[in-house]
Amino acid sequence: MNTQKDPMLQPVILSGGSGTRLWPASRETHPKQLLPLTDEKSLLQITATRLNGFAGGTLVAPPIVVTNEDYRFIIAEQLRQIGSPASAIVLEPIGRNTAPAMELAAITASVDGSDPVLLVMPADHIITDVEGFQAAMAEGLAQAQQGALVTFGIIPDRPETGYGYIRSGSLLPGALTARALANFVEKPDLEKAVAYVASGEYLWNSGLFMMKASTWRNALRALAPEISATCARAMQDACRDVDFVRVTKDVFRTCPSISIDYAVMEHIGAHPELGHAVVVPMNVGWSDVGAWDALWQVSEKDDAGNVSRGEVMLEDTRDSLVFSHGRLVATVGVSNLVVVETPDAVLVADKSCAQDVKAIVARIKREGKTLAANHRKMFRPWGWYDSIDTGHRFLVKRIVVNPGASLSMQMHYHRAEHWIVVSGTAEVTNGTETFLITENQSTYIPLGTQHRLANPGKVPLEIIEVQTGTYLNEDDIVRYNDSYGCIEH
Image 1: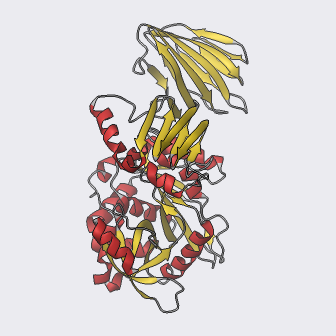
Image 2: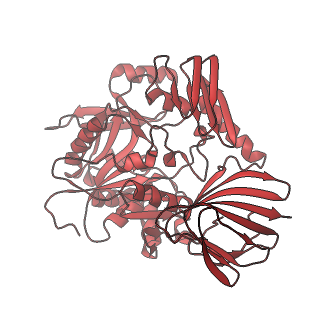
Image 3: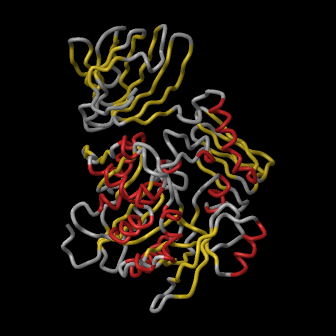
């Protein structure tokens, strides 16, 4: 329990969603919030550090992250890399939108009897003006501590039909910028969007929320009692597994799927006894990065209006976004394009059609291809692997095992494996033998032999694995023990 006199601000990061319109960089198993789209840090990492240096005597707690089972290890690792481990990573067994996710976080935040102010942030947003963002958060905090349910509206710089809007009311007494929240408005057509922007009363709905845990829980209990009760039951039997809080699946799957806006915020005006709705306007370089054109819009551009990352050469190219994740990408005599290269797919699109990338993803799924879900490079709790070449009766992987990590003890019926150490030290269990091999050394795992690969060292272990045999799919595996409870390798 927080016994300090200073107020406690509890960041809550919502990290679900697959970001299909940012394909081929974003995939279901490695979505946009886990990608370094604007600099070397992922959007999740940037979100987790957005409150660093927050002033005003406020204690900022380590974040609570709400996500799903598939992302748990990479989220924990990314937060460890930036020195900002989560206080808890709450695992939803199935996605149920933002209101249940916020309730799970509120229960987690107040389990010790404290009542912090929750700041709910999607993990996949870009904000370029961090100082302005923190000033808006300070304004919202002052309101939340008085029992307000606070959201943050983006001052629009153009008519936008892809966002919901918030109509703001009068300036609140004693506030710098905070206003009464008049009502939420659905995504408009272009004519209405033009009128909204011209009026000066309307803001884009940012999806950011702030309020005391008790304020939220009381409002949800009154306005959406089924969500409140279901989340309480699901958390009652949740188990804590190191950094992870595993929500009870059979209970949580019965929870209604509904957003924070629909469940609570849109109804507060009719229930003043539950608190008052407040909106804080912001102009902080915000984007929800819904598609490639949105990323281009908020990114730093060269003199010709281009945004580029990776090994890229641009000749007579204007107003384009060109990303390379490995190979050289060159463009000549083009404009207004999106070009994204990954090791296993290339996207070329007119920037004005960036929203339609989701149609390609849907088609990939219909045709039974895995490119919508998986990258060639796959992250695992012990590290990652990259399937760099394949052909008849062989598969070559580059494997990196984190210090102190190990794969499961396993066996294959239809393939043998050859391991060559590139760097680091490998502890190899091969049948009844366990031994070490180091750089430029190799070993052979015969078909049908129990084996394990581990890294006992303090630096990453990198190996090249060559699989040979009649059947090389991942379902040819028998695990004898598995520390991670997931498909590993």
